[in-house]
Structures are given as structure tokens and as C-alpha cells.
Length: 293
Length: 293
Image (tube, rainbow over all chains, first blue to last red; front, side, top):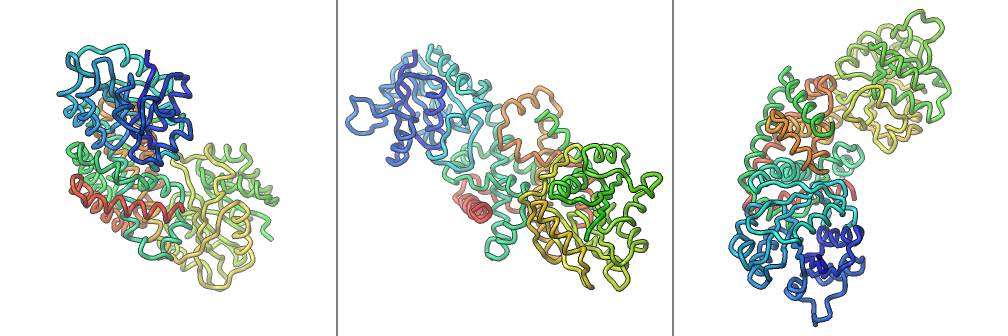
């Protein structure tokens, strides 16, 4: 029953959703909009979104959204919030707004007044647990969601058929659908996603301060660094523009896990020459076995 | 002119050296020894080392070493030190001992009295900048050194032809030979190798404390965690038995970089809601561009 999807924000995530939908066999229309005309054109050229609907004279996000059964908000968290607030009053009760934001409690509060009540459109909070350190339309891939989790958060009110069907499309894109509440989501994502990002940024930033001033030293780091260095700093390439919003809107949970990690690092530092170091390694070994089998 | 190589320690590194030598076309003998009879047998079965020399009745590391032109010490740092001290007095001036230890200043001090003087064997300190989080012979690969750096540290005295030839074999194994002094080595490796390891261990250990006690929560982490989590904790699988020695013998340098990272993490934590966070992300972006182009 979903015939028209609108994707607002055709960067890495938004364009990947479009490509993945097509790859999964979605035959309806996919309207796209991006505040960057270049990103929108690129998304059209790669087939992630279609040409604009005929009733549209110029690219207009509101006309895109109003013409769609499902509207996917695919930008940084603050921009998702802005769209949620602006679209709520203009959409009808049969329409579903979903998103790809990495923080959910804050967004759900913003949406509460204008969604999911009688006569209101639906907001289905979503969050694919995939990504790349490089943002931008050019990196979009139809296979981006394959094998990853795509979280959905239950909301009150009466769900229409579009919501169940959207989750079915997400499964066809290759993702595992996982449901959880907002509190668990934001606590868990702080630990398994936001913290690893901040650690990658901190490590790369600290190494930049130490070696980056001196081109000869940086050349040495480049010549000598192996897989461990490349891997542990990969997330250092992530853009501030995206993470600013996540840091701001999930600050409490991120602070908590950052502090716990700082304490663990200090414990390791104080025990480099003692047998206490064994405990940290053995706990880490257990975690890895639990994580990857 | 190198006809016989002895590898003491046929775990991941030692067995990989044997396989890589064969792959590079080395046609001489490769003797092997390991304190674990099982690891030695496994290395022989995979063709990483040969059957023992005919003059040997039982597996004997001293006979292996004394029969070889080049002896590769491939165990944890403390075991390398022990072998260096025990072999120095029994080897002749034409023989070269080299190693794969990740800390060099401490080992070079241990070797100083019995190597590289007139009438003494040579010690050529070496360190391939590759590895895996899983130790053990079973993971050995002839391609392990391809594309990685292999560091050598200059020592005094008169180098024989075996040393230059060994470095040539290292190149044929696919590695880039890089030379540097002990102080630079230990400072640089603390930052680009030992620190990433401690961070991976700390992150995995802290997550184990937070989620590992509760199987349902750990299952949730497993279901939700994406590439960032898997990658940033991969090194958490590394064995204490190997890292204990590195932590102990390069503690001063590791403490310094750990402290700097703790400070950077605290800075990020204190600025999750401020524009100061931009600086950390932008510095990290610059480091990544410098590292991977």
C-alpha cells in the first residue's frame, strides 16, 4: 500500500535508503529533497530518488512530503526535529513520518504534540545501526543496511498499515528489525555507538596534537602505523556537523559512559607494571567472545 | 648466504615468518622450536618450519639456534630477553639474532653486553608492525607482513652480510623496511600501537562491566552493535600474556600517551554541549587525512 516515499535529506543515509528500496524491489515513487541542490542532483543521477512529482514546480520539501505515504527524515538530529515540528501540522492521519536519527528520546518529545493522536499523522521513530565515517551522497550504497540492525521504537496510538509495511521494506533492505523503548535506546546507543565515536575522535585528535604539527613526524606515523592505528582512528574522519547534534541531545548518557571509560583507562595506566592489568584484559576477552561468538 | 634460519617461538608471528620466508622463495632450512610441543607440530604441519636438523636427537632450541645463520626470536618480550641473554654467550660472531618484539630500548639494553662487539654474535633488533588480535599458530599466514612496515634499529659494531640479507628477505616477504632509533621507536610505538591496544582493551573491559553480567543485556548489545563497536573493541581479544610484557617494559611512554588521551576524553565530555567539541572533531579529521591520504 506504500506507493510514494519522500526522503528529506539525500546525503549518505537518505540516498542509501532510496537505493536500498529500489534494490529491494520497491516500484513506487521516491521523491527526494536536500537543502544542497548538488546532493539532490547527485541522488537523482544515481537513481536513489526520482524526478520531482509533476505537480511540483520547483523542488519543495513540503510538496514532496505532502505527496508521500511515508516520509523519511534523513539529516542530523536537529534538522530531523525541525522537520518533525514543521510537518506535523500539515500532514494527514494516514501519513507516516520516520527517521534515521541516532538519539530518540529527545526527538520523541519534540514530536509528541503533533503526532500519533486522533486525526494526526504518525511518527515512527527509527534508527539504522549502520553508517560510514564519510558523509555525503557519493558514498551512498544500496547494500548499506544489509546485516545491520534497524531499531524501531513503539509509540502510542493506533498504528496504520503503512507502519507495518515500512518495517517490512526495512527487512527487505536486509536489516534486522529490533524494537526497544526510548530510554533503553539512548542508553544503549551511548555505549555501543556514541562512545566508540568519541573514542575514535579523541584518539585521532590527541595524535594530531602530538604529531600533526610536524610533517616529518606525521610522515613517520604514516609509514609505521598498522591496522590497529587505522582501525582505531577511522571514526576520527566523522563530521562534527552530524555528531554535534547527537552529543548535544544525548549528552547525559554519553557523559556517563565517557567517565566510566576514563576511569578504566586510568586504572590501566596505574597498573601497567602490576598483575591488576590482567583483569582488564580478561574482561575485555570475555566481552569480545560475547560480542562475536 | 643465509642457509639456515631458526625460529624460536612458532606462534602466530614465528610461524608466519616461516610461511612468509617460503612464500618469498627461501630454499634453505627453517628450524623451529616452541615450548608448546603442539604449536611446534602445528607449525611443521603447515610447512612453516622443517623437521629438526639431523644432529638433533630431541627438539632442542639451543641446537636449533647454534645450527642457524639467523635466529628469529618470536615470543613475548620477556621471553625474547631471556633467549637473548642465554644465546649471546653460545653463538659465534657470524650469527645474527633478530626478533619481533614490540619494545626495543629495553631489549637492546639486555643484549648490549653479549652482542655486537668483536668476536660476539650480532643482535639486529626488529619489529614487524603487523599482528592479529588472536594469537596462536593456527592463525599464521604467509601474507601477514605484506604491505606492513618492518622496523629495524641500528646497532653499533660491524654488520656482516647476513644482516643486509635478512632485511632483503623481509622486503621479499612484502614488508617495507623502516629504520629508526630505540628512543623514537618506543615513543612512536607507544602512540600508534600500544595506546590503540590499551584503548581497545579499556573499551571492551568497561562494556563487559556494564553489560556482561546480564546475558539478556549482552544479547541486546550483540543484536544492536554495528561496525563501530566491533572495530573499536576488536583488540579487546588480545591476550594478556603478550601485552603484559609490552606494558611493563614500555610503561613510561604508554603512561604518557594514556594520560594525554584521558585528558582529551575529559575535554570532550565537558564540551558535549558546547562549540569546543568542534575543535576535537576537526583535529581528528586532519589526523585522518594525514594518515590515509
